[in-house]
Length: 188
Image (cartoon, rainbow, N blue to C red):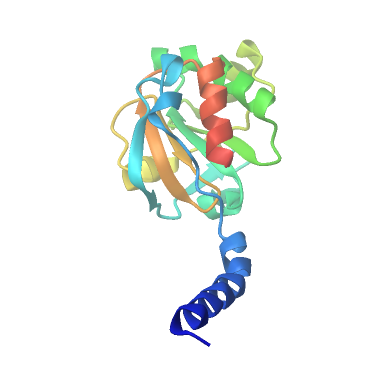
């Protein structure tokens, strides 16, 4: 047998042996610049996607949670507050995005910074008819600090393995077709 033939045979075996491992890798989100238009034009990709710390926050019923609790899902973390006018403006579109995307593989995590005004959040959801979003709080702004957020609202897109794909600082229309396309691309 020739050296070329041995090399080809060895190469095929290596490919076949590694195929199960390659198939087990999580899908890499294909977020090209063509998706970053219109309502999500301010989306800043994180290149390469970076692992995030497992930040803690609490549910509306005071249940302690972390980002790891959502591993396996694409997550859009949104930092907001009832006293932030742009935040208030974008919340209905986040609710529509969650409705359109479903909750099987995707979740919006609106982390409220309402500490002293925490009692205002549930009535705010009722008043704005936010039926598809959960209520979550960033107690002491620890998640905000750990993720390097300094502007409200800020939304961070996280892939199913817990890596930051990018973020938008400031308000966005999450009900726009471009936002939906960006989230679907993040799902892989």
